Length: 470
Ligand SMILES: *Cc1c(COP(=O)(O)O)cnc(C)c1O
Image 1 (cartoon, rainbow, N blue to C red):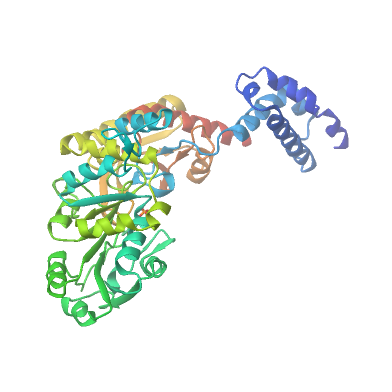
Image 2: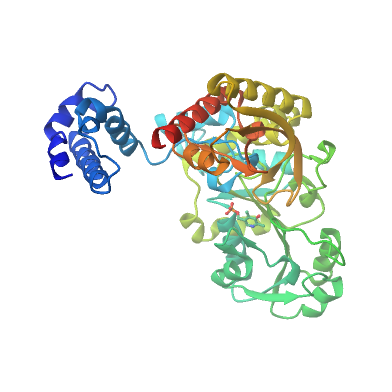
């Protein structure tokens, strides 16, 4: 074994061999050198553990493909594109919504050039960054005023801090939700300085529960969308119109954290009735907050719309500066909102909406094309079949609701679905998919047409990696 170590190429030899690689020759030399050292350490480890037991495997020629792949993968940006074959449209771990083409272009412009970000071209003086989206948000939602901040968590925080700091906000026990671990209504409420006044039981809350809790300390009544769970059985929630009546009777504002917040009524698509932001505004919520990158299909943002007297107070809050929205986000948000001026255009152009509302026919046809591409890449040994399956909206919209569609199921003899799933995380680009019934399932709903070939190629890469290791 000890003689094997001497067959390893030197760092200088490895560097020289890598120089001809057009990609690697662009990388900083110091970084390449560190990676070569790390790779040679790995080889020494493989000699010690008996994985490499043959001097022929240690020639520079034999090692070069693996070495180049090792250096390339370590030198890639950490933030990367992935192929989402999970069928979860608003996948928080995969960056939630992808943007419409016009929004992508708007972002590129906003960062490549100076802009009127906070400059009023009419007067030549300082302007407001919110002016770019306030009018369009009011036009679409029917609200009197609007404001955008960093995300919906920030929107809820600043709404409560402004309107209820040091006083009580009444919320149903059935709505004290936790979203993704780091956002819990009671915790955000505490951070805002507002005092949570819980009412009702977990499954049932009545108008009189709220009414009995109203007192001198009450600042607002609040409703929270139960985004990621669904209550069934013996349940009762107080509706927004009922809450509005109560608010009017006691002179209290009604706040609504809508969570996902859709601008487009999807009831016609067979999706369960989620209220749109327009409906919530029309039913009299005083302040409504929702995310920009959930069902809206835009960039990460927290959107606040509502009555002018309240929204104006939120705008004046010094905390606003700490949660302010960036110019790239503003550009993307305005471009996305412009698509909603015509709902048909929005359904066609906003990828999130397009994926949610995709027809059975289009999903089946995409699944067929994907299956064909996979067969072409993997050959006859692969079992590639179409099957009925379900996708999810994700992002706390339409909780627990399954979207029916067609999946491409892939089985390879002698290879476990789990080893395939793991190997796919290491392809370029990486592919994220799920396993069901012991087979890898690819959901074409969340893959664009131009990604079908890339998906098939990723599978080919994954299979090659598994074979190389065996
Ligand atoms: C998602 C969600 C939030 C948090 O929104 P972010 O935009 O992720 O900050 C808050 N409240 C509800 C009800 C949600 O669904």
